[in-house]
Length: 233
Image 1: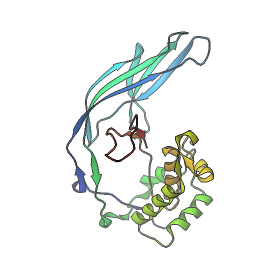
Image 2 (image 1 turned 120 degrees about the vertical axis):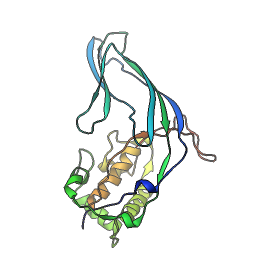
Image 3 (image 1 turned 135 degrees about the vertical axis):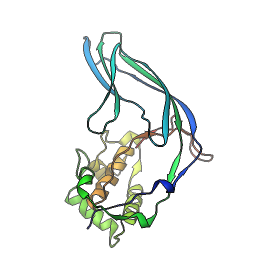
Image 4 (image 1 turned 90 degrees about the vertical axis):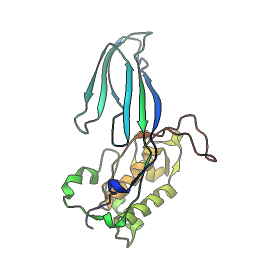
């Protein structure tokens, strides 16, 4: 099966008016022993991108901290090093003012085409530590897509299969985003659900990748309320 990819052009992206959000992100590290210990922490920082701007940021962290970028993806990280003394646990708090535009993409079938350079997507076609791409996932993926050859429709039938087969329950998650857990238990959190989706897509030559983010808006009228709407992939 040829490697294929679908994309929406910038002109097909529908933008809604930008809104501003104040976000407070905090982390406290509990002591793991009764002795003093040295702790190193790498903490992700909200980035600028085509749909959002970080207008202001203030950081409260241990005295020894710096900004850096991890080498694999170039994500901005806060690096802190602290002495975790008994009775005094390290704490980080970051306040942001973010301007964000909600975006939906109109997907055009005319944009579905073979990859000109599949090697550029090789990373997103192979297995990862807990995301399987093997004989089992390939057989299941082929059964799901059947005779369908259009990559967009393949992705859609895989999506419908996964959302129908999996039950969302964070209390019964694998804690690592595991294809095996999803296949065996049919229950998990968003990481497990996406692990299965990614495995099945890669098993038929579609190159997906995991994206994490934060839903900033409250639920729409008639939807379930939540305390934090919320961190998801």
